[in-house]
Image (cartoon, rainbow, N blue to C red; front, side, top):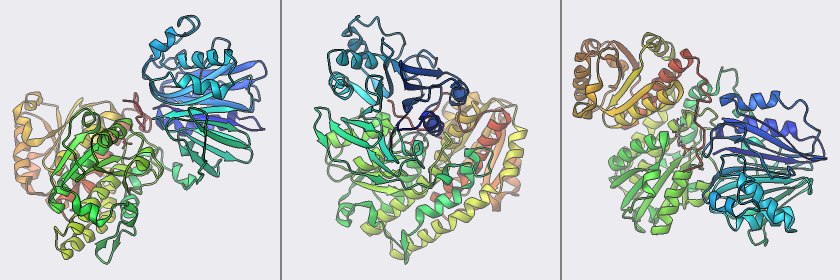
Length: 616
Ligand code: M6R
């Protein structure tokens, strides 16, 4: 992961770099740094401040020179601890070159041995620093900065997005990409380079996506892109489409709460314009009806919360479209030998569209078959969106908090849209039944809002279990997916031990962990399996667990539910049990949020995490 920002113009660029770094923190924040081209070489400042690195860096740059070219970096550590010496940008031995990197240089040890001092010049524990010395060595042999970068990259194995500056060539930032995202932008005589659009949003009117194995030369008035041999590549500019306001907190104490409250809109917008007279119209998806009819097997690949959306999507596709569907964690899929052919459809779900594991699963698919790949993502122009044959965009707006909420809910809705679309085109469901289910989906925004309105009750339950250290989330069917999602949310922002488990599987081992004081959150909203779930609640209650039941509003006062539960939370019925996760997930998010806040945690930037995971 990591975030890169670079700027070169006629005015001091430090404010642009610091603003960009603050906006890129979702990519990693365990250290941050800037390097400016000053008269006598590179001026550099770095800070390793946990999730406050960019703030600490901003405090520490009061003595910076008024440089007009510079680069910055926010880091999510892979090689080497999150310390100041390991923070980027890294410099060469002369202190005239600075380099920032996102990705992993796999052969960094071998490359270090080829350096003039056999690697002794490398002072950090990172895989990155060797690149700074490698480029400097090529310049020492007479190459200009861009040529030196191209020459060095010919020897590099791994994934990278780079930004490099050298004091001998002021007014130039050289960037390069293989696998990790990078964009260039231009505005009013300032050249910009960044990992992602939010970093330069509001500054650049136009941006250029850098493809793999391309080198970009950014100058105050120009952007030039070449391949690794130096051959010029045509520039295709794109407009920046996001409303910056949407990325601000808008009166909420943090982005996570704001994004939880934006979920009704995310559901509504993901359906917007796609349902016409009771039918789904997905013209922008780039998958013809013949393509859809040809599909005989679906594979869903994703990671984290996107994987949990995939779990629900799989059940929805099997039920509505009656297609055999496999689901796999992306980082496992890419090392499997899945039986794919041209009739297979691989659905890759990724909020960011830049998750490396998911990208690699897509690359694996393409390398071994002619299967079609459909991306479910929010980011137009993301790497995944561009690599896929077809795209179903979720429309949740930019999500800043590391813990996914509104993007996850939009993914759930998108997966139902996909399932019903496959059913519609393949004629597996009567048109009026498709229309009925679509009408249910259209009622979800109000039900999600009602679930958000339970926040005071959820906060109260969280307060009552605040002292607990061990949590289980159990469910069956789609409730199992929500159990995993509820546990993931709690783990990532509260740092409490939480396990998500299929309720029926508890008795095969995990029930040994249930003892007085352990909290079990049971997803017991109405479904075919509700009675079995109630029996599982009984099993844990009998062993002393504190049971929190999540039920439908109609069951909130049910005597049996009350007898099995210490605390009851209720949400509206979603209209179909497969759609229930869209509503059920909300109190689970609020529960994790309340416990994390009670523990004084930074919910937007939890420790050790990054919003976009662009390493393996
Ligand atoms: O951008 P992606 O949807 O591919 O990200 C996948 C996971 O990294 C992500 O969902 C992660 O699990 C979240 N932090 C969960 O809240």
